[in-house]
Length: 362
Ligand code: GDD
Ligand code: MG
Image 1 (cartoon, rainbow, N blue to C red):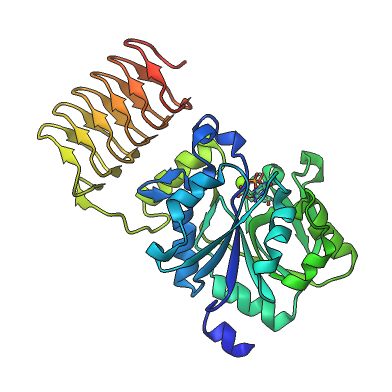
Image 2: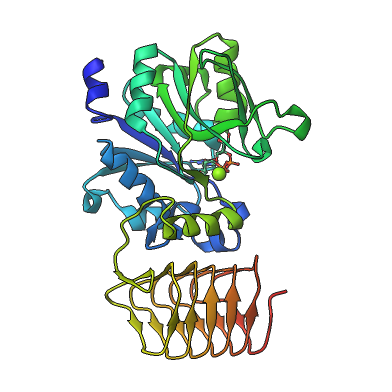
């Protein structure tokens, strides 16, 4: 047991909950499920897999329900990443608890569970070591946030034992700033509490049931980096954080003017560059365009002369017309932005949209 904590998480399996519909990121997620939305230069879950692999976890179960084929097409059996990926596919979505239950036959005695939309630098081997040392039935990673109402509120006693779990509390119910970070270490035997093959919430049913049964549920409070990328604001924020060095990711590309340019991208002379930014594979930015702070061009994005971009995420295959101005916005796959279009802060533009010349988003 102690040896395991010294070896980090080596040999442990993780379940990644990757079956939600990503409704708050619509329209981007209508065609691209949240687990594979690009985050800077790679599909989101690659960032999570990178974290897991560094701690020694090489075998992962993806619990999938919404557009599973898109996720499978990206990650396959994991061999390209030096991992083994299994898929527990739900016919109909089983909820966050039902999804873990559905993966049960593939799991060992102790399991790591990750919500498939959180990015964090939590010290997972330490969480696992604490879990084992305290003989907890479940150990939850918590993180402090300014407004817990969008999350699961978790109350502790002075020893770090969980006393109460309250999903999406009303303002009057907020008693602490620590919320469920969506990362758990569980004794797999506790899954017996969940009925098989029915929709079941890990937050609203399983954890409260575990607590009322008197099982030891402990918390590890993480005060480092943590974000749930599930809303347009947070999705834009994670890009700012990665570009600004708040969450370190080794991006493929060369450092230019405080940003990164992929070796297969073309930036013509006479483009005004102000970092941090990322220009991905196959992008072409023509003379006279401006790439400002916080711009991410995922791949194969063409930017015409005198277009101005800042603080925005632009997915593969998008065309930005002359003198277009994009700021604080998200643009999905293959969008066409006409001449002199103004894409305003907060805009989320879905796949294949055509914004005709001179239009504006708000
Ligand atoms: N397989 C499967 N099946 N996965 C699901 C299902 C399902 O039916 N429903 C949701 N998921 C996945 C989502 O894809 C996501 O990765 C994760 O479960 C959590 O679902 P969200 O819809 O993103 O929940 P949330 O963000 O509102 O709240 C959850 O995360 C917060 C932290 O970000 C809760 O766990 C909160 O307690 C927590 O604070
Ligand atoms: Mg979420």
